[in-house]
Image (cartoon, rainbow over all chains, first blue to last red; front, side, top):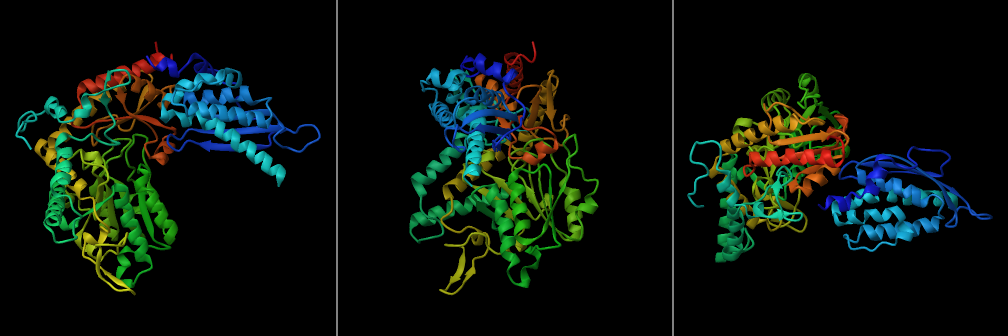
Length: 157
Length: 432
């Protein structure tokens, strides 16, 4: 049965018991993303702490990621995993993690993800075999990218 | 076509075994060798060999650009195209001159809305197609985006106001304020003959009667009715009717706008260019008569021929028998799916004025996840909002899972669906 390869226990765990869920303050920016094919949505906030002696930039630390959303197990679990991974990373590290995750999701199940980089998120490699579900897995990640960009732009403005 | 019988004349049920033999794709397997159970005909139907053969024969024997050129092939291609128009017109009880070919039903509806936009800036003679501030267009809450967004856009471009019939909790149109919603300001009433989500067959006659009283045009989205039940434009008495070829055993890339001749004759074009003209000067042009006025560019003749073959196929089976067969399927599905614990049908739960689309929600399992387990079992359904987002919002749900039937589906397909829903509940641990 291929289902088990897709719905790995890690994914179902995060789905049933999501981490860091709920919208929190303080936050620097909020992004609301919708998957237009199914109506799933996520509202995601990021709080950044600037590196010592500098403004908000790529060296800033992601001090919190909080979210609310409704959607399928894949989108919800993926957002939960994201919070575990990205809270505590710098923006630059987070963007690199995002790139690694995106690359894995576009691998059609053939990726060999680096567990040191992606940790629990490697469980989503099975999802990448199903093109219709890739957007589900990326929903929260795209919202995170958007919220971080907004935070940095605000700082630059 | 051959003279094989599909269960013998006048008998019900259909011989689905014989029918299925015409659809090669139905015997394939999916996902590790599972027999495929195709329950997504509401999105697009499968095509019988007869349709594919007709298209192939056109390309192999008669292919040329139609309504251009005087060589023999051009003659044959044009004859094939126009004779396809006659077959398709006959299928809906219309005259060939009233059948306009479009890319699909979406384009057919846009043809009307953009013709009305074009009329808005034209001379007074086109008043019947003009809408502006103070005018109203009425749709329904259960519309597919294809029969909602174009009207929204027309209102935005012209300043007209969009209004809509609400949907009841049972998934029926609420016509209690028919007289108020459709009033002397109403210029157009546009609605679905059959809902692609709820399966509800809407009552056309009272809406048409009210629209006539106030002089409004009636546009019927027949995408989910023409493929599944006998439809006669004279009986319906509407002004425009749109449907797609690919949902009725025909090829992709062709749809139909049927319109009353006098309306088509008065209506300005939507897309302009080659072969829709009367005379062209550098400064100005005049238009061809309908239907050519609305068919700019080289048309989809091979697809028209394929769609005509689909009409022939359905006529041979008998549309009344197709409808009866689907009625049996939907009655069975409503019962079997409806009695599953933790599953709720979205739409009328009685098979009265109801077509073969059965949407449902499974408690505590998102439709995407339901669909994934069903797919793993070979059961191909649609999940999401089915391009009817406002309807889902009204019903307080994000998305649904939809099984939709056609003449090649069987009661066993329904059993497979039920079994797969149970598997999904087991897999996600919501039911023992």
